[in-house]
Structure formats: structure tokens, C-alpha cells
Image 1 (cartoon, rainbow over the protein chains, first blue to last red):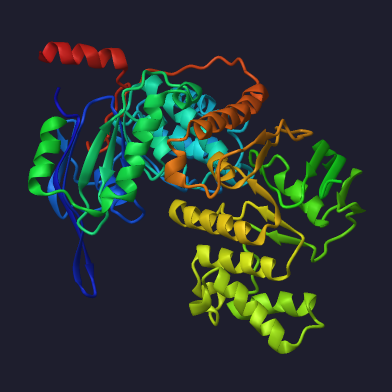
Image 2 (image 1 turned 135 degrees about the vertical axis):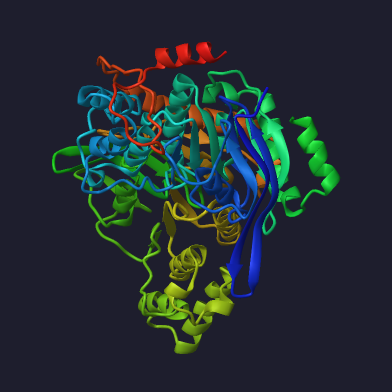
Length: 274
Length: 296
């Protein structure tokens, strides 16, 4: 199957007073259409750097990113980004925040249809009764729900999620993971998410990409997660396979993430997941 | 007689029933974790034990005496650390020690402060101001300050909620170690099932409001010291983790009210904003398929 998103030999270098610092080096990843991929690694390893290069928010030093046959050269509404902080405009209501992008991307549509799209996604994320409130009147979890609705409403080719639930308490996180999974399944989106939460990665993804520690971070290992969908948390918690995979990821983060695989190791990985 | 006892405690704010009929009995030296969702009254509960607020009805008893106000027999650690920004690490802790142990000699008080700074591994930073410390270090100061006044009971209100995952794990291990050596009675408020399983003798879920109350307690009989990696293999750990998580998810599922609302999703295709704006009707999903066919 052809790659919907193709990241090849990606390099990111930042200038520092002590000379250039290579944060990410030779990062390769192919994502199929409709796949849910998570990037997992320690804080500061460069996961978010990779994501923001795909989003077009950060310049690519070397290598390339191709999305749906088109090279990524800058940001655009074909990639919906959900950030850790929802970044809503505080003087707009939740509805108006979502409408902002809709009015641009669907400018040829009637006002009624544009409003219908906003209402549709805000209702699906659970804000049917609060869509006309301003961010200040919403809880952190509800603001993030709005951030998710805003991203899906533009029918992006790809969803990019940068630790979207990192600021939420663990129980609110559970709810929002279900909201996200539901929408992802409904709209059959391709998703790339950054997280350092092992349980979150296993619950959501088809494949987990484990990144080595920076500088010069790269793909350290890839785990296929084959639990049947739709998944329920209850079913996963009872599955012995879940704990085996969980341990595999924890072991990588605790022990193996500190070593960059050699050229041969990288080629073997690329081959196994081609 | 229980060490700490809550009998039919109820609390409302502005007509909102936050907690109702909370009953709790904690033995001396026990580590109890109360797990629940945000905004359901966890902090209200611990504030009543601390004596910072009083129940509308019911009573809180510590060693048989009714709690009527705050006191140094209960040490409280907040999520936001609550350190005085103009005082150093040493001075923040000394402030509490000088109040509570005013009859000690200056020398004894100084040695006492140093002992607790060493316990939380901050000797190298004792002359720094809070703003010169990381989140984890600030919370260690807060823990040291609370332990140094030698309270009868430690009340931890989501103490690690604001920390990143790695720092959080380190701090959990430190709390476990300190509890092993000091053997204080502890009430920990948390929203993390894993944290509760790692630290507590007993986990009590808090149901969802209005009128939240404590659910059925789950005893945690995992051997100590508990090791995060080893626990992952432990069938009992997995059983408890699933049990408590499902219990909490169940509370939430019961809360959900389904709404019936007619939703319309127009099958519009997004316009390419890199191209000049056009004046034509929007493209729809069905039309795109036709286009693809004609190309093929």
C-alpha cells in the first residue's frame, strides 16, 4: 500500500550559541491512509519537533515530507493541529472559534451549511449545550473538546496531535480519548499524535513509534498494536496482551531509548514495516 | 477507636450540594488514597479534615476530638506548593518550625530544619528562592515543610498533579520512602489510579456529584516496597487497576445523559486556499468521486 504520509531522512538543526544542535537526524516514517500513529519518547527528545515539521510550523533542515502526494512546505488547513493548550481566542465563543476556520475553508458554502458543520462537530465532542460559551466559562477539558472539534471541522487530510491531553487529569483524559477515537473512526482520518503516556498510545494507535533520546533523535523501534476496533478500555485492561505490549514500551523508555540504533538496525526496521 | 473519623459529613456551597453523607474511618499509620474526578469535591473533603472549612452537618474527629479549625497536628501539602516567594528553601521551612517548636533552642531548630532538607535531597539548594527551583523541587520543599512540623496526619491534595510524568514518578518513590521511615497516617487525594496503587493501603473512590460521597473501599495488599516495573507483571496489580478504573468509569457513565438532537453534516469538501478564490458553489463529497472516475 502506498504511503499517505512519507517522511524521509528528516533532519532538524537549531542554531545555538555553542554552534548548531541537531535535534532530529535521519527520521524515516511511512503512514498509511486511515492509520493512527503515535510517537512516544521522553520529554525533549524531538517528538514535537517532528510533528511541527509535518504541520509546516517548523522549517525542515534536510530530508522531506510528502503528504498525499504533495510536499509539505508550510502550514495549511489540510492538516488539523490539536495543541496541548487548546489556543482558543478568549473573546470568541466555542462556536465562533470553530467558525473562524470553517469560514475560510468552506467560503463557497452557504452560511447555513457552515453553521451546520460547526454545530455537528461541537455536538459530537459533547459541547451541544455549551457551544455559545466563551473559553473562560469552560473547564480545561471542555476547551480541549473545542480544540478537537475545530480540527475535525475543516476535514483535514491529516490530524496532528501534540500531547493534546497532557494538561488534563487522568480521568478527564480517558473521556477525551474516547471522544477523539469516536471522531477519528467516524471520519476515517489519518492521525499522528505525540505523547509520553504509554497507556494512551496503546489505547489509541495502530502503531507506536518509539523515539530515541535526543540530540540526534530517530526511530528506535516500532510496535504494532492489533487490538480489535472499536476498542473499550475495559476490554483492554483485561487482555494479557495489553500488559505485554505495555511492558515492551516501558522497557524501551527505561532502557533502550538511550541508544541510537546503528545503520543496520534502522534498515531492518524500515524493511520490517515497509 | 479510629484515628481519623468522618461521620455523615455534608457540605454545600451556594445551594450546590457538593458532598453528602461522607463516612470514613482511618487507622493510625494507614495510607489511604481517595481517587476521583476533577471538580467533585476532593479538595473540599480534605479542607474539612484540615479544618479550613467546616461541614454543614456531621463531624470530623481526629483521635476522638472534633476538628474545629486548622492546627499543626495536620500537615497539608497543596498542589500549588504555597511557598513564600521571598524566602529561601531553608527560611520557608524554618518559618513553620519556629512557630510550632518555639520552645526549642535555636540550635535544635536549625538542626531539625536541616534534617528535613536532607530527607528531600535539597541540601545543595537550601539557599535558593522558590523561583530558582523546578516544580518537583518546589514540591519537595513543601513536603519537607509539612513533615518538619511533625504532624499526626499528612493530608496530600493532588501534590504531584502539576508535575511531568518523570518527575512525578520520582516524587512518588520519595513519598513511599518517607512514609516507610516516618510511618505517618496519610490521606492522599489523587486522580491517578496508578499513583494510588503504588502508594496506598486502601483506595476509596469518590463518586460523582451533586452530592458526591465515598464509594466502596478497595484494599491494596501489594507487598512493599512496591516497584513500578515489577508491578506491571503482578496479576493482583492488574486486577486492582482494572477494578478501580472500571469503578470510576462506571460513575461517569451513569452521569451521562443522552441528548437527542438532529445533526446535519453537509458533505462539503474544503477549498484549496493556496489557489485564488473562486465564485462557484461548493464541491461536495459525491462530486469528488465522479472526478476521480473520469481521470481513471
